[in-house]
Length: 339
Image (cartoon, rainbow, N blue to C red; front, side):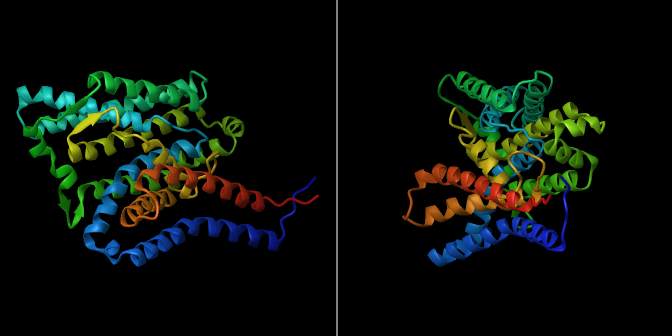
């Protein structure tokens, strides 16, 4: 059996990949047009700012998820991780208030706590998956339950609230703006640029793709597979911690309902953006557009009464199923062999 590559086959394969890359952007453009036709206020400055800000949380998390999924892994714990990190941040800042007051020092302590917890949680998921030889789905499903129960325990079944004195200092992290853009959007831009550079311009990104394509071949190629896969979960945890830092001042509270379905939204953003769920191909740019698409869909639902806003999760689930189905069809057509 030999594989022959003809000009026609190569052209077809290139066309498929080009359509795959452009698809998310085309979909986003169509949604924006639909949103404007349904309500011209959709393109108002206030609504666009709100769209970008709301996209920032899921977008930052989704950038981390892109690395995990590219290597063939999955992380179902990000929403619960965000909840427990939010709760711990609030507890730490409320405690630090007595010693350091309601200034920036207390806020920095809370942010440092968030980063340490995010890195630690990601490391735990990574080590259990690689060194523990447990499927990522099982590991993160287990930690999802653990993290969610921990924040419920810390809140005693209720809500953890940030002291009002600290809220005044911390509030600009969410509600402030720089050069006309909200701070969360700048965080999203920074994470997206770093993620794109890491995925497309470093050996680490190439290793992630190689591992997702064929882990056995990657091992024979002297790639430290366990180390790379563990690092992807650490990156995911770091992204969750950054998203949490900009999310906490929004409501100033945390409970068992914090971050619910964030894992679904993050995975949906990654898959919509063209990253292959089984690994081997990741697109940070596509992930960014995917996050925007999800937020636009939710925003359109708010503008119309065609579908209840309570069915937003249903829409996201359908989007994941359809996106994965389309991926299978495209990549199946892309593989042409002759004997």
